[in-house]
Length: 362
Image (cartoon, rainbow, N blue to C red):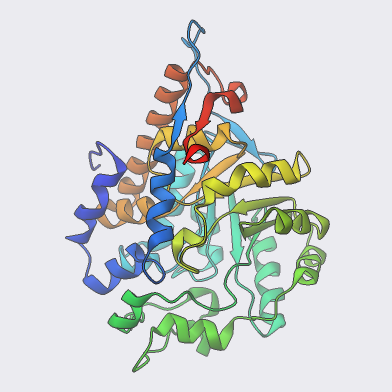
C-alpha cells in the first residue's frame, strides 16, 4: 500500500504515472479553473475554534446518511471512466469503499457495469445522468433497483458539458479498449473522437437531455421507492425547490469546478443552503476536500457528510484498490485526530461554534 503524508502529494505522483490526456481530463476544470482552485482555497479561510478539557479518550467517527451506517461522514463521489487510470477501474474503488465501510456513488459513465460494481461494493448509490431517450433513464433506474442500490443521485448541473480547455486541446476521447459498460452493445457505449472538440462534450450534447426541469425530479421519484439525491445545488432557492419536488437529500456542488467557472466554491454556499432547508432534507457537500480538517469544517457548517473525488482517482492510479484504501484511511485518520484536538468525541458533538468564517470578513 502506498504511504501518504497528505492527499495533495498524490496528484504529482499520479501525473508521472498516467498519460497527459488522462491527467488533464481528471485534474482539469472549466475555463480558467478559478472555481476549481477556490474550492480548495476556501477551506483555508475557515478557522477552527476548538474546545478544551473535553474527554476525547474515546472517539467515534461513524454516522448515517439516508439511514445507512458508514464509518465516517465521507462518501466516494461519482466519477466516470476509472478504467483510464487502472485496469480494475470502478471495481477496485468499490472494493476499497466496502473495506472502509462507506458508500460508493457509482457513475452512469462507468467503465464497469452497475451490476458488476454492486457485486464488489458495500453500500452504494447510483448516480444518474438523464438521457434524451427517457426509456434509457427508466432502464437504468430499474437496473439500479434490481442491483441493490439504496439511492439515486441525479446530477442536475450538466445540461451541457463545461468548457474544459484542456480536453478541447487534447481532443479527449476514451481509448478503444474502454467503453461505457452500462450501455454495452449500443452506440451510447462509445465516446466519439471529434476533430475540433472534446469527445465527451460532443457525447453530452448529443445524448443528455438539456430540457430537464424540476418536474422531472418528481418523475424520477415515481420510478422506484429509492430516495432521490439531487446533486449540483448552489442556490438556496434551488435547495428549497429540490425538497418541494421530492428530494430526500441534496449535494451542494459545483461539479469540482468542471462545469461553469467563477461560480462560488461549494463550501461558501453551504451556510445559506442549510439555513434555507433546515432539517427537511439531508445536505451533503463536495468540492475541495483534501484534509480531515476540511471534513470537520464542512460538518460544522451543517453538512451531513461530504463526497471525495479526485484524490480517490489518484490513489487508484498509483496502487489500485490498495491506493484507494490508503486515501480513505488517511482522511479517516486525519478526521479522527481533528475531532480529538477540537474537543469533539463524536460526530454529533460537532456544532457551528467550531468554525469561524474568515471569508465573511474579506
